[in-house]
Each structure stands twice: as C-alpha cells, then as structure tokens.
Amino acid sequence: MKNILLSLFLALVLNSCSTPPSKVSSEYFSINGFLSAEENLLKKEKAWLLKEVTYEGKKEVQSIHHPDWEQELKPFLESAIDKPSTVNAYSIDSITEPGTVIYLAKEKKVPVKRMAISYTDNQPQTIHIEFEKSNSWFLHKQNLTYTSGKGFQIDGEQKMALGKTTKYSISCRFMK
Image (tube, rainbow, N blue to C red; front, top):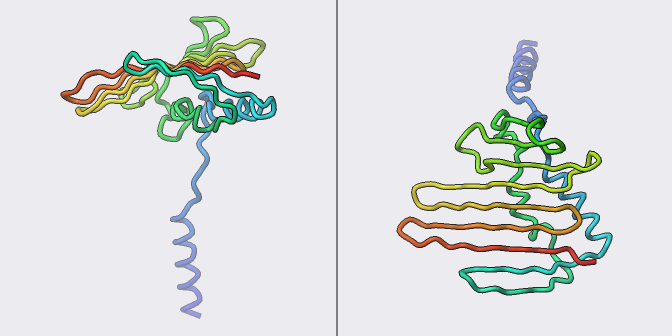
C-alpha cells in the first residue's frame, strides 16, 4: 500500500512538472500563413517565375517554370514576427497610414526592424519588410517587398568584418 501511494505521488509530481508546451497566441501578422495561401494559389494557377538577379553589378535573368516556392519565398518566411521569441517585441501602428498596419521593433535584438502590410478590401496586398542582422563579424540588411499575385523584390547588402560591402538585388514576377 505504501509503494502504491509513493508511486501515485511521484506520478502526480512528475506530471505537474511536465506541462505541455502552450501555443503562443500572437496579434502579429502571420507571414507564414499568408505565404502558404499564396503558394497554394500560385501552384493552382501553374505560375512560373521570371527572376532577375543582380550581384556585384552583374545581371542574370532566369525563367523558372517549376519553382520551389518554399525556397523562393524563404527570405520572407525567415522574417516571421509571430514567433514565441518575439512576443511583445513589436509595437503596432494602424493609424499613421490608412489601410496599412505597421509593426516596429521595440528591441534591437530582433532582425525584423519594420514590417508594413497594406490592405485592400481587408486582404493583404503588399508587405514591406526591413530586415537587419549583425554582430561584430558581419552585417546583413535586406529590404523585402512582396506584392500579392504579382511578385517580389529583395534588395540587400552584406558586409563581413574587414571586408567590402556586397550588394545584391532579386526581382521576381509571377507569370501565368
């Protein structure tokens, strides 16, 4: 009887210590949810990409007829602000620019410094993101713009410590 009570007590203690991870609810825009819906629509429409990449002043144009949408949209997906680690990291402004919601970083450590989502008929149309990651060894900045159903633009620069600054631009149009 004593062993049963001890076992029951231990089971209760262990159970109370291992609480299931709670889902963090966020009032921030879910870029992952938005882009997932966009990706499904692009696949349904059998869209392809006309991609122009400029790096170190050299330009290359590509037609990508079966794009890996997740890979192509990865810079935007990496800019998600609705993560558990960013709860309360942004202020939200929906007054300054009518039809636009702006998220401004309140903390220096978060890489997304500003995200602005413009809406038409309550649907996101344009997303603009200012992204910056840095430490004592490198600096990486990007300005990303996604326009629903049309394409996206990424302008960036990278600088390694004791190195030169490298600038690049990626412009993609969705073709149907």
